[in-house]
Image (tube, rainbow, N blue to C red):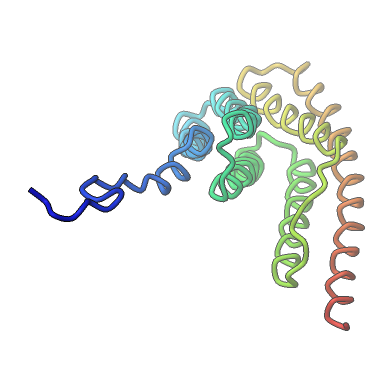
Length: 209
């Protein structure tokens, strides 16, 4: 018989701290990891099996599943800092691999691949500048930017399919859509450059006060 009353919660097993697992092992994060895991499969199909069409199909899955993890993160309230890193990381690596190795394999036209590489390099450089200067990292997504991404991703996929299946009509379609998408890409990039200048000016103003 206990002479003293038990304190509230005494004797109970404390709940396990599942916060880490809940943040890391979310459905959107697992999808992003799966997208990253498909990149070696893409390279194996392109060079190991000499199957550009198969590689293009894998890129199609990687690229167009991008909206799924973002949608599920918002829908399931599973937005996490890790997810904010994994999602764009999967996009950047997948596009870089598809463009660079597509150029090496002769699937993509050199001028098209070079234009995409320059654009992505400028975006990456801007991100480094923002981080180094401590500027506002938020990005105002433009609708035209989404349109350009849709067109460029479609063009890249079509180039792979056209090369693998020898579909000349699809290669012509990829050229037309790719050129328009690139033009919009660079137009939107100019808007982002103006945003970057404004953010850096705000940092300078804070430093001077």
